[in-house]
Structures are given as C-alpha cells and as structure tokens.
Length: 263
Length: 261
Ligand SMILES: Nc1ncnc2c1ncn2[C@@H]1O[C@H](COP(=O)(O)OP(=O)(O)OP(=O)(O)O)[C@@H](O)[C@H]1O
Ligand SMILES: [Mg+2]
Image (cartoon, rainbow over the protein chains, first blue to last red):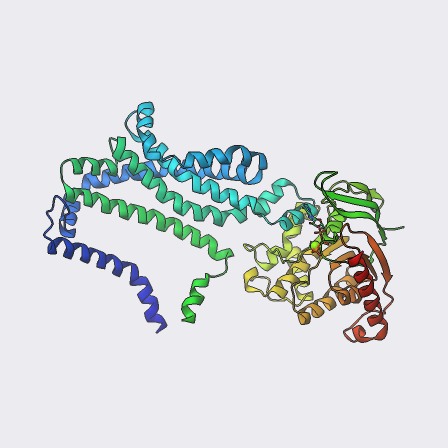
C-alpha cells in the first residue's frame, strides 16, 4: 500500500504532463485548428528535432544570460538584504525605494536599456537581475530583522561581538530564507532574460520565438516554448534540491505528511 | 563582601520623561554562591532586572557592581536561560550546548585542542539533566521539557560564575517542572555558581532559593525579602512541610499586597 502510494507520488507530475499533452492534441484535432494558429504536439516535436541546433545554441545563450543576472542577484540581493535587515537606518533609507522600484514593470524599461547598452546580452542581464533581486532582498532582510531578541541577549551576555552574532546566528539562520528566495529568483531571472530578448534582443530563446512568430512558424514557437519550460523547471528543481538539502538538516518534517496520514 | 551589589537602580525604557519606568529604586546584594529567586506580578520588571545584572541594559540611575567592579558593558561570563528554549534549530543538541564555548574566552581560543574534552563536558552535562544519548538529535526531535533541559546545559557549559534564569520552567507541566527543580538543585550544589531565578511560581522559588525577593507591580520595587531556612537537599516531601507551606503563604500575601499597591 505504502509502496504503491509512493510510486504514484513519483509518477504524478509525469502523468499530469502526459494528460495535458493529450488534451492539447485532442483539442487541436477535434476543432481542426490550423498549424499556423496552434500546432499539435507532434508538429512541435518535429520542429524541435529539425531545429535542434539553433534551439540549443540560443537556449544556451538565454541560460548564460540568466545565470549572470542571477549571480548579480545572489551577491547584491544578499548584501542589500543583510544591510536592510540589520540597520534600522538602512531600512528607512533604502527599503521604500526598493519597493517603489519593484513595482515598475521591468518590460517597460527594456527599450531604455537597449538605448543605453545597445542590442545584445547586456539589457537581458540587467532585466534578469532587476526582476529577480527583490524577493532575495526581502527574504534576507526578514531573516536578519526577525532574529529573536533572546538570541541577541545570549550572544551579548557571553561577551560576543556583532560579528559573532552574525556568524553564529544571523547567517545560518538566514540560509533557509535565502534558499527559499533563490528558488523564486532563478525563475524570475529566467523570465527577465526572455522578456528582454523578445522586446529588444538579437539572440537567445526569446529572440527565436520573436523571429519564428513573425514568420508564422508556430511549431517553432512552441518548440522554443518547450525548451523554455524544460530549462525553467530544471533550474527550479536544482534550487529546490539545494533548499531541501539545507532545510532537511534544521527543519522538522513538513506538516503536510501529517495531513495525508490522517486522512 | 557581597558578590553582586545593586544600589538604588532605576530603569526607564525609552525617553527620560515619557518612557516606561520599569524598575525603581531597586537595591539588593547577593553573596557569592547564593541562590536568589525573584518573584512578582507580570510586567513588574523582573526580566529587566536580570538584564541589568547581565549588563545588557544600563541603569538610568544607580549602580550595579559585580565583584566590586561597576557593570558598564555585558558581563562576559554569565549563563542565561529563557522561558522559550531558544535552541538553534540547525545545530544538534550537543552543538547547541557547546555554543558558549565558541564565543567565550578562553575556551574559544582553544576550540581545536579541546574538541574532545568539550564534547565530553557537554555529554556529562546532558547526562546530568537526563538527556544522555540525545546529543546528536536535532532540537525539534525533543519535547519542550527536554529542550529546556538542553538549554540549562547551554547556560552552564562555560562554567559561568553567575547564572541568570528567566522563568525557564514556566512553560512546562508540573511533573517535568518538579523534576527539573531537583536537577537544578543538584547542579547548583555541584557547580557553586551564583543564581538569580525569575519565576511566577512561589513554590518553585521557595524550593530552590536561599533568598526570595518580592517585587511590586510596575514600576518594580523590591518590597520584601525572605530567607528560606529549609534544610537541603530539599525533596518533594519538603514542599508539604508546614514551615515550607508557611513561607509560601507569606509570600503569596506579600504579592497580593504588591499587586494592589
Ligand atoms: N525593550 C523594551 N522596551 C520598552 N519597554 C519594555 C521593554 N522591555 C520591557 N518593557 C516594559 O518594562 C516593563 C517590565 O518588563 P519586564 O519584561 O522586565 O517584566 P517582567 O517582570 O519580566 O514580566 P513577565 O513576568 O511578564 O515576564 C513592562 O511594563 C514592559 O512593558
Ligand atoms: Mg519576564
């Protein structure tokens, strides 16, 4: 019984994905949708195979762009988050600005970056960074501003310095917050680079989609989309794994299991 | 000569004029190795008085001296325990207990060399509080009472000369609580340190302490001092003896009066 439910849980995402493809296929077939409106999964797969070289090359470009923007988020998001979380003054001075800036739609900024930095990877890297860094700042800041006052008292009463407080408590306590936000940030960075590539790029998977759709090559658009899906899911899964590796050491097991066992 | 000397201490949180007067004209002196309990109504400034002794907050008026030297910054070697266990969830129980050694000198300088000795020390403490074998568990795998025991070990591991306990047993059921009274009594008779215990519970105060101080409602003043002349080691039987019950009753009246005042 246990074994079977575990297998089912393993297979569940694949089954639901297969069902989605099936519905897509049946839908296209049943309503006789033209391939330049909506291709079938088969046509998409064929296009994927036929154009695998440019798809792979441009996928790699997008991946690289995303990772560069994301690295910037990792560094600056963590640093700014620490600053905002630890210093009241920094919080008052910086945080409102960050919130205001975060509510600007980044897509609207891409043309400006293109004017400043020209077509190419730079606007995409910047967009990836801008879109992804706020959740990291917010989470890391929360981690540092919510340190229990007792723990601060504890370290101080032992004659510990501010640095001890950081090393012994602040940083290890912030890691799960950081990893949780990185999961979100990596997907946002990916979305950011693709947006920039669609609006003003000359490479990357977003650019493939732009060119293909202006040629009414819908199968290629969908093939590119599936590459996007696979890459995005892969990166999310990677950070999910990191997150879980860290969390499993410190956190109690999720209450969700309790709910399932109860039923 | 007294070990801890508190002289006419006031403490105001916030601004001088508009702030909350949490402690007012507190004066008391504590001998080396004395076990003091501090009782009083909620919000009367008991925790604040502990923080004052630890040097975590500076008095607004008056003076605090430990071993003759005025306290102007956090004392380096006090042990503290709090109402919630506050164990670090990412460390094993043993590593939680060892945390003070990573911060306090001279242990901190010798962490590498003393690794094995420190480990043995932590395990000995864990055994003393009835947690032998739990050193490698994570805090969430322990019950609340067990976490409190581990917290006591953490407070004691660096052999502090002063132990400040802020209602460490308040959240526990009465069986566990009474068991831990014995544990604490044993630890104290072994590790001759000076203890200030804040508590709501009068039986606990009388059971453990040599001297009980009663604080009035805010602003907290010390309104009564009781010497507990009950032989040690005290047992649960002791708590039913008339002399013990008499002291508890006296304190109860004093607190009743303090609350209305
Ligand atoms: N950091 C703080 N800032 C401002 N006021 C505070 C602060 N800490 C405590 N107070 C105030 O000082 C008074 C005494 O607080 P304290 O925590 O010392 O009480 P307590 O006797 O420990 O109460 P309890 O028994 O409920 O723990 C309270 O009225 C509280 O509101
Ligand atoms: Mg308190």
